[in-house]
Amino acid sequence: MILLDNIQFTRQKLNALFNLGTRYKRFGPEAPPLIRWIFYFLRPTLLGKKWEKVHSETMHQFQREFLNLQRSSLIPPSYWDSEVLTRFEEYLLSNRAWTLDQCIKLYESEGQRERKPEAWEQFYLKRVKA
Image (cartoon, rainbow, N blue to C red):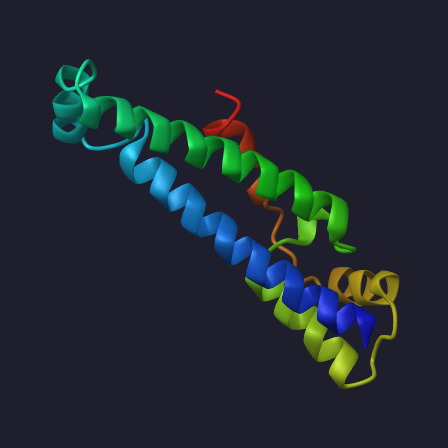
C-alpha cells in the first residue's frame, strides 16, 4: 500500500532528522560550555575551521532534509510523531481506515492526540532559524 510505504518513509526520515538534530545540539550552540570554549579558542586553527564547517553543514543538511520531508511526505507535519504513525499503521493493517483522511479522523475521534504544537516544526524553528 502506498500509504503504509509513506508512513515508513516518514518514520525513517524523522529518525534521520533526529540524528542530525542531536549532532547539531551536541556540537552547536547548545554544546556543553567546555566544548564551546575549546572551539572558541581554536577558531583560527585548522581544527576550529573544520568544526565550524561541520557545524554549518549539519545545520544546512537538517534544513534540506526537513524541507524534502515536507515536500515528499503525504502525512502533515502535525502528525509526525512515532506514536501517531504507529496508530496510522494499525488502522491501515486492521482495515479500519483506507486513506490518510480516515486515519486522521479515527485518530482524532479516539482522543489519542495530545496537543503538541507540531513538534518537528517547532524543533526546526528553534534550532535552525534562531
